[in-house]
Image (cartoon, rainbow, N blue to C red):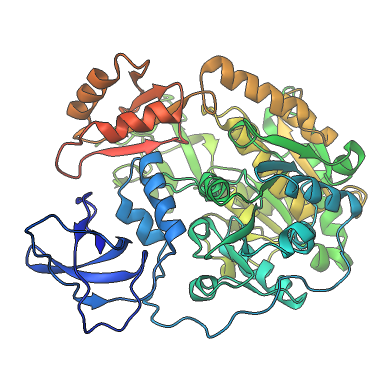
Length: 597
């Protein structure tokens, strides 16, 4: 047996023998423990029936550690290690159960079809049928308030899927969504699961999040990725793999259709793939009413709370009878703290950290540096005066102002607030995390959408559209509630194509415009990028430049100290990253397809 160990620094597999006394099943993917350089380590069988080199007696396997991924996933892992320049052991670990699985369920449920009449609309069924007719990847652009359960059941009930041997893999962005979708599928009679051992036993439907891309279904009938635009599918730590791309490659290898759904599919999802859309009227009806408030000529004394916002807030608070059913008024402002940029009232000097020079934030009792956490009193370092003025407020400060303005106690929600600890208030204000914590809202107000829309990132358009999609789902489709059930957007660029397209309920123009910009700028998907950083980056970059000089590969330095490696496509980039040896040590980070650029 050929075994790849869980020691990330060892890329080489090793040969071992199966003891004659073993009765446990050993196959590709099985988890084992072996002796390596005098100590026991874990590993996975990656090849069987291997002939060791002549004249060498191989050591026996020490322990059978249970079930692991099937052979098809083991092959996929080797590809992923090349694609994202990561250790094979990392991906094998992602494809393995968190706990040792020594026994699989005795039997799996029957066919995935529930026998019920399709509940999805005819147009949704037509979209699914058109995509499933191809053994390739299709992108489905669906209005944000569409019930995606209907799409999943349309796939499961399609004859081309229900009669094909294998299970259906369904990916969603969050664990809560996976659990809710599984419960709803089970109630409709489908054999759906989120458990590793049940998927390994061949259950008809496996539902998972990012790591679910490695779900151990022995064979596939189809793959469905819901909200393929969501950043949650991308691993933030290195290797920065994308579950969407893993799912697409997995479906391609097994020759089954793959459906990527999204209300706002970005260029990296759509490139080279057919995009199917709903009718224009259906897509528009699936968006909420979006009101853009032009803040260019606003009275600065009003701060971030425009007259239109105040009217919206008052109308929501006055509907006391329906507020519990509809949810709170949700206000989004993507800066935490009480004040994010302060200056002395008297001399105008910015409040900076004396230790590292970063702008300090206002906290209870004084000022704190967000970089080095140094704290000091609320005193100007230049003139010694005690009064500071706020140049950029944070969520905590806005919450205080909002509570005073509306006469109710507004609740604050940031990324640090757990789902079960949401404030019970008719008004919630927070960073974009509030859109992930709340399930429904009477209305959503972006107090300054320009923080996202004009962000210095090439993904600003995709991120802003994703926020508008999430807000739309909290509010519901247009004409489905009172006039206050809408998304209010405050901006100084009201004619921005992102905002006008979302207000129309048709994103075709803005998506095409973003793709054109990326092509002109040489950004993904029209180029392949990798960000290299860390103390060991300089010698590695020298080797990269030398090996890639005749392959059209360039290396440029970014303002934050990272270096960007650019190639025409991923084949050239990933071959180069795999070819150039890395310096020993842990001071090198390679992020293929970096997001924060």
